[in-house]
Structure formats: structure tokens, C-alpha cells
Amino acid sequence: MGNGAAITRSLPRRWTLSQRETLEFYLFISPWLLGFVLFVAGPMLATLLLSFTQWDLLTQPKIVGLSNYKTMFTDDPIFWQSLKVTATYSFVGIPLHMALAFGLALLLNQRLVFLPLIRTIYYMPSVISGVAVATLWLWIFNPDFGAINVILAKFGVKGPQWLASETWALPALIIMSLWGVGGAMIVYLAGLQGIPTDLYEAAAIDGANGWQRFRYITIPMMSPVIFFNLVMGIINSFQTFTYAYVMTRGGPHYATMMYVLYLYQNAFQFFQMGYASALAWVLFLIILVFTLLIFKSSPLWVYYEGQLHPRR
Amino acid sequence: MSTKALNLGEVILWTRRMSVRRALVLFISYIILGSGIVFILIPFFWMISTALKELGQVFLDPPVWIPDPVVWSNFWEGWNAMPFTLFLRNTLIITLTSMIGQIFSASLVAFGFARLRGKGSDILFIVLLSTLMLPHHVTLIPQFVLYRLLGWVDTFLPLIVPAFFGGGAFYIFLLRQFFLTIPLELDDAARVDGASTFTIYWRILLPLARPALATVAIFSFLGHWNDFLHPLIYLHNEKLFTLSLGLNLFRAEASAVTPWNQLMAVSLLVMLPPLVVFFVAQRYFIQGIVFTGVKG
Image 1 (cartoon, helix red, strand yellow):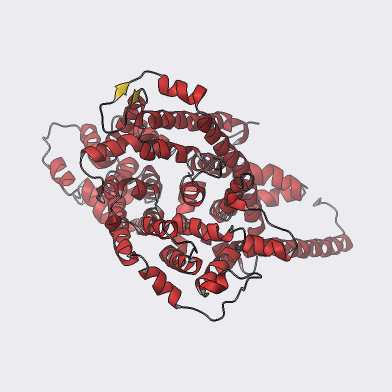
Image 2 (cartoon, one colour; image 1 turned 120 degrees about the vertical axis):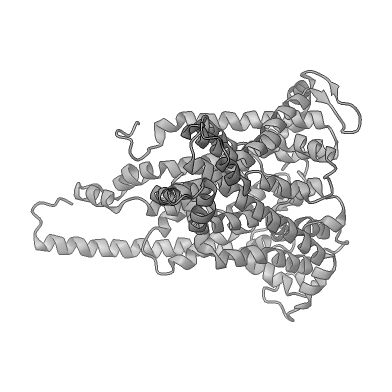
């Protein structure tokens, strides 16, 4: 990395300052630019090309045109099931997550005695993830000896079979994801603490009540943060993999067959690289459409400071 | 409340009513937050309690919440049931090497975007930001094919090498935001003294950005420590397994009676380093969140 300086020093005199700066700029960003071409742009294109083939990694890829896409949409019930599961997980989970995180952040944004401690406890589960967490929740959801059903039994309720039940497996995964609500909560809390207090004071002087201050100050001022959390929430939730893989393997009877899990199975268990590539591109397009929709809608509801008139 | 004619009595009445209301709001807040804390802590408590039980006591109905006797040996028996020490070594190699790669390459690129302007720098920055939203599964298969061609499957290289190529858009963005807060006058002063651009990056901005670098280091550590999908795809030889793969294998290979006590003990050990890092370096977490989520 040290050769950046050496190269720029040995440049011929006749280079203009801006040419020199351009060169330096490209030198500095070269690791990312190379990585982008090698690991992102190139592979994306390759995925698209592969999606028009049939390939088991061992023999030559065979060009099959659009047949992977045709199979996917017309002849693959598991594909539709995985879409349904992922959409349910996302569109039930994300609103729950956001509302809970926002509500908790509002509660925490007061002068509380144990604020640092409470914040720490809530954030704790967000630090850990992956297989250890999956193992822990497998045990918690154990129908006979797990914590949830044990506690339910105390209240005289016979708990469901959770991960072994077609009805309850997906809700179980959503409940489990709520354990990590502290991550988004901290983001909201940081946003709330960044709202200038004089806005509230001015509104109070003008006679705004609590609800009005919340509706016309808190919500608009927080809308960029909400926007950020919504985009990231959708992207992450469409890519859920580890928990479904470790805890249910997509079962029982495809009840938790997340999209990426199905993609993984096609690629690395059935070795259908072409079909898996087609799945990957469809995932990309789905996420792209949602992201664009949110971005396009943002002028309607996201308020950026410095903008003179909040567009409504 | 109108600021106009308020007589004293009205003011006193108003403040008293407000403080009663305020106390009520606080009371309800504590109740709600408290029940949330119970929901957060029960799984931890359940895990610790199970990890310290005899296996026989794990399957009791009604269950025992406080283990009796306390069986500490679950920790080392679970840990030695599989070569977890080797898995720990592998995880540390991957995690620490990638972390170093991400810190250096991300800060270099971030410096470029924060301090230098060249033809196309605006467009490239937009490209960088849009990769933040790219589902990385779109690139998974060709990447696998590429690494297979290079003969890198069943080595740590596919898990480490990408970290040296920019280290991920998220970290670049975070560091760029931080660099922007450092006054340009420092660069100018150094330039007058004859410092090259690289010297400014290395000697001035990097040391000043230490808190942001710590944030990157922590998030990078957690990301690699908890990663499951990539090791799952690239590491097939058990000798190369990470803790995630090892723990998954331990659970999957368990005999007819799952040794939940040992599984919980090992899970707890695997969670411990991230938790310790979190408690030690909490303020860097908050800082990273403020710099990306709120100011972004």
C-alpha cells in the first residue's frame, strides 16, 4: 500500500493538479474498485448468464434459454412456497419489529434511572447471532421441555409443537427474531436524542399537545431513520438463511422454506447451478423493486432537515 | 398552554397535574420496559440453567429452574466432545485476518472518497452506496465457481481474501462519514509541510479516526465470528471447521438423547467473546450506529 506515495511523487511535472488528484483518487479506491469488478459486478453478470444454462458443476454448462425461469414460475410449487414464506416472514416481522423498536425507543427517551443498564440489556441479543443463537432457540422451542411451553404450562396453556408444527414453525421464527429488536431500537433512540429540544419547546409555547408534538415533530424528524430501518429490514429479512437452515431445514413440510435456503439447496445440495442462478436473479429483482418503491415513495413521507417545505 | 394571562393558581394546579401525569407515564414505562427485559433475559437464564444441569434434570417435568447439583463439567465435556479448540483456532485465524484486511482496505478507500476528487468520483460513490443494498446471494454462485477454479475450496482464502478488496461498502461508508468530520485544515497544513497524500492518510487521518476504526473492527469481528453461510459453502474438511460449523455438527450428530446441557454450555462459550467485546466497547457500537443509521 505504501507505493501510492512513491508513484505520485515520481509523476512528470506536466501533469495538472486535477489529473494528479484523479490518479490519486483511483489509487486509493483501487482495492474496492477491483473487488467490485471481481466479486460483485463480474459475478452478477455471470449469475445472469448462468441462469440461462443447466449446469451441475461437473459437466459442461448447457444453454437452455429461459427454461429455468419458465420452470420456476410454472412448474415449481416449492419456489412459490418459498416466496410465500419469505414474504410472510418479512411483512409480518418487519412491521412488528419496527413498531416495537420505535415504541421501546420512545419509552427509553425519557430521564430514566437505569437508562444505560436497560439499553445494554436490550441491545445484548443483537450482538450474538448465528448457530449458537439458533441452538439456544431450538431448545427454548422444544415442545416438551423448552422454556416457552414450560412457562405456558404454568398458566395452564398447552403450548404448540412450535418448530415441529406446520402452523407454528414460521411464527416461532418471527418471535425469535423479535429477540433482536434492540438493534433497531438503539438506532431509533440515537435518532430521537438528535431531535433539537427547542422544536418541542417552541411547539409547547404554541400550544401543541403531546400527541401533536409527536405527530408533527417526532415523526417527521425521525422519518429518515425509519426509512433507513425499513430498507435495511427488507433487505435483511429477504436474505434470512442461518436460522431456517439450522433450526428447521425449511420444514416441516416446507413451512419455513426461506427463499435463500431454497437457493442454497439448489446450488449446493442438488448442484443445479443454472436454476439456482435464476433464483438468485429473481431475488435480486424482487429486492430491487421493493427498494425502488420505498425510495420513490420517500418524498411523500420522509422529511430531510434543510428542506424548506416538508412535502406532504 | 397559552403564555398569556396565567394567574398563579392556574400555574400551580397545572404543574401539579403535570407531575402526577408524568409520574404515571414513568411508572407505565418502567412496567413495559421491565417486561421486555424479562423477555430478553429468560433465554439467557434458560441457557445458563440448562448448561449447569445434569442431563437427567434437563428432561424433568415440571422443570427445575435452578440446577441442583451444579454441574460445571458440562463446559469442558461439551468442549472436548468435538475438536472445538481447533475450531476456535480456525475461527480466530479467519476473523482476525479479515478484520485487519477490512480496516486497512476500507479506510484507504474511504479516504479516497472523503478527501480526493477525480473524474467519475461522484458516480463511483453512488455505485458504492447502491452495493449496500445488493443482496450478496446474487453473487454467491459465480464466486463459488471462481474460488473452485482457483482451487480455494477447503481453504480459508475465500473467507479472507475479499476482506482486502475494500472490506465492504458499509465500512467504507462509515469511515468516509467519519473522515468528513475531520477538518480539512489539517490536510492543508500537512501539505504545506510537504506531506504526500498517502502520508496525510497514514499519519494524520488514520490516527484521528481511531474511534471509527474501532467501530469497524468490532462490527467486522462480529460479522465473521457469527458467519455461517460462507464457511458452510467453502469448508468441507472437518479440520478446517469454524465454531459455527462445529456447533452445528455437534447438534446434528447428537445421539438419540440430545445432550442439551452440553450443547447449551458450548453455545454459551461461543457467544461469550461477542458479549465480552460488546461490554468492553459499548460506546463504539453506539457511535457506529449514529454514524451510519442516523446521519446517513
